[in-house]
Length: 229
Image (tube, rainbow, N blue to C red; front, side, top):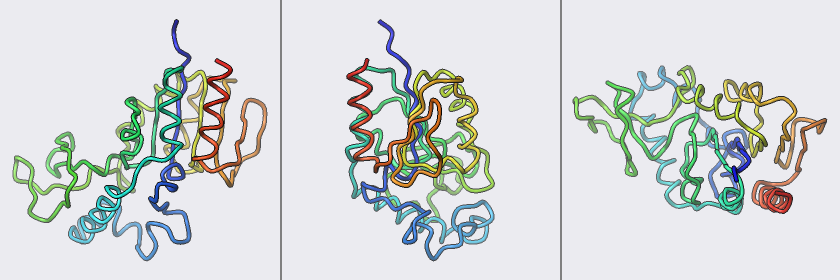
């Protein structure tokens, strides 16, 4: 019997409870930093060392945290449904929890890529330093999408959302484009669940809001969906 397709859109809120700061919070990731200086092509050209160190610190921190109940609940959901995750996060917590169908819209922190060829990407868990070159002797950079850059995985994400029979949104305001535009590609009338402790939208029609943190709201919804399957 074919499993029903569930598409999950996740943002910083799902990883916050694992200890990864969200840049929108008062004590957030970008605090004290001009975003354009550490997350843009202009900032990279201006001071590569500063950009590398910023992401090196994030990478080191990522290696010290673990998936939380929300990540594991989505793995449980995949036992009964065909679950595909589209994440705006650059961490690997979904994969570490056991999810195997994950599309990273904004890149992956534990990968590096060549400044010579953007398709030359490699696994990279240590610091990236000036002088770390690809096989063509060009500097490596974080494999992340910076402000002002194209989002190469958006088209794939768009196609995934278009196949959804249930849509779950976790820990993201869905106000930052192009990610926010993905909702426009979901089939009309399908059940949509929005999990956030401080939702910025109102419940209506096919949209249900679960006003809980990810680690509380996702397991609750997953149990309900499995019981109703």
